[in-house]
Length: 188
Image (tube, rainbow, N blue to C red):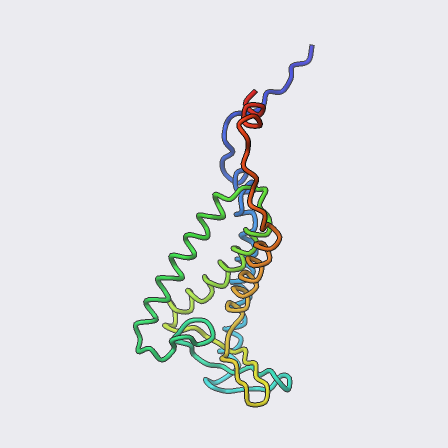
């Protein structure tokens, strides 16, 4: 007589558990961070500060130091913003890692969105800790309109935010509440 395999009631630990959480998408954050840092170091090695090279009629590589947040927000605030944005990025990064660890495998788009945001947040956090400012170099403009320079980390954060919005539209139906009867059926 064959013995039936018993289902383990032990919780998964180690990497087996990670594959069942949102941390399975941490590779997105790692790639985003590496791409961000690689491009920043390439710009620092190839450009002098404020040097600009036209790539397309509406796009330049322009090397600048950003003491503010994304798109130079609060860049001229007097210095306190470095510590403020460093603290925010550190806390947000920790919260995202915690959330990814606790998110169920059934969620797909939301952990991907948060992994993108994490990669960008850590990229800019690293800059603030190492340099005291963020390195920006992507510069879009059209005629007299000029968008502040940004970087790959900002772009990765933007992609993550767009995916969060997409997830809200895709999963806009609130999870149906379980009736007492369906809970009893599951418990039997």
